[in-house]
Length: 354
Image (cartoon, rainbow, N blue to C red; front, side, top):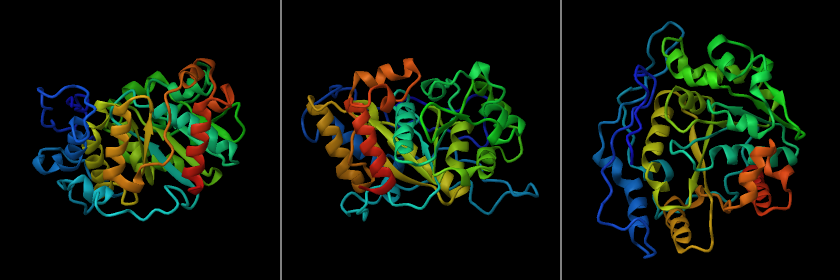
């Protein structure tokens, strides 16, 4: 697992990533044996914290008088099994990951890039909108893929999430409607690339998104926050504003490497900044039923994380890759495709557990 340290100069309020034990170089990159390297990855995700005590904590939130809160900034997360529940004990979730009161703010997060965060955010948001839920997609990624994927050109806009986070522009002045009924987007721009540094001296920098959402949260049933592939201040803002985290995991060999670090940092945010935060769902994406490796990864993840893993998986589907170039979610670009059907089923599971 690569060292994912925060950008230089962002030392406080940002999760510093510790180096994980190197993978066994003698093992083959992909094995179809049950109990082979994939199982070792899952076991590492559950146990690596025990040998890691050097991860820098997230700075505690500051009170209005500028003093630090009572949370211990040096708290280090315990094993992943304490967050997700031990693998041997079934988690009570008869309705999957749904059945929660509205409105819900869900951060789609994974510090590993290319695992389908934006694809899941955009298409699950569109599917929720089809179910008559007013849904807002908040794009916190400087690449702005969720914005362009919903047909919005940020270059023509007066305000984006950069202005909301840095210049205290009201959230309602930033939100744009999309071509999908009930679906709205708070767009990102390339200016967000510098926000990590610009937020450092800001007061209460970790909760700026939470304060902005508080003004409009009652207007929506779901708010989906598309977090960047990092654990910097933008992602921390997304985690502080959310009550739930949904983690997309690619059904491939390296996808599990960062899972232990992600669960550790979610726990640190919960301890120091957001007591309501929890990992509500793990979504298996880019699933290819033709390979034994995909089956093995799914089996191992379900075996350890139990009911936290969504029942519906997202298959590899070329139409999912083509839809963003047309500025449309898959539900309108190709409503009958396997990808559209999968995201509709996932949206039903998330919303009602059906």
